[in-house]
Image 1 (tube, rainbow, N blue to C red):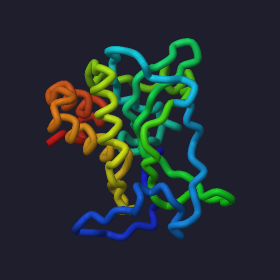
Image 2: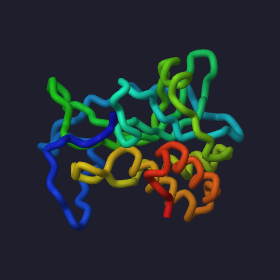
Image 3: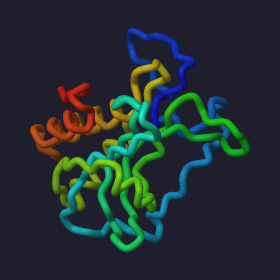
Length: 191
C-alpha cells in the first residue's frame, strides 16, 4: 500500500517533501532504495504499451484508495522485468523503520513478482515510442512528493504525472481518463 503515514497534518495549500523524498528526514542520510536493474536490463525497444498497474489487494478489507499503483511497461518478457514509475515508502540506510512520507526515486527497472502482474490489473494508458517514454520518465523524475496529509498517495502522484503528460501531448487524454476511472473505480478523475 502506498498511503502516507497516519501521523498527518491538514494543509490547505499542499506542502512538499524536499528532494522528492529521496533523503531521510535529516536531509543527509541516503535512503535504501529498491534495486534498479536498468544498468543491465535496458529499455531500448520501439513502441511499447504502457499501463497503470494496480497491485492486487493485500487482503479482502482493502479499499480501492489503499491499492498501490504504478505506471509500467514490460522491457523483458523472460524474467518479468518492467520499467516502473511510482512513489513508495522507503527506509533510511541503517534504519529498521520506514519514512513517514513517500519517495519518488525516479523511473526504475524491476523484476516484478508474477503474482503482481497476473493478479494485479494492467490498465492500458497508451502505446508510447521510446522517446515518449523517456519524456514521461523525465516528468516523473522531477515531479514533487507531497508531505503526508492522509489523502495524497501513489494514485494521486500518477494522476498528476499523467496530467502533465497529456499537457505535453505524450498520452491521449481520453485513454488516460478511462484508465484512471477504471483503476480507481471512478473515485479519481483526470482534470
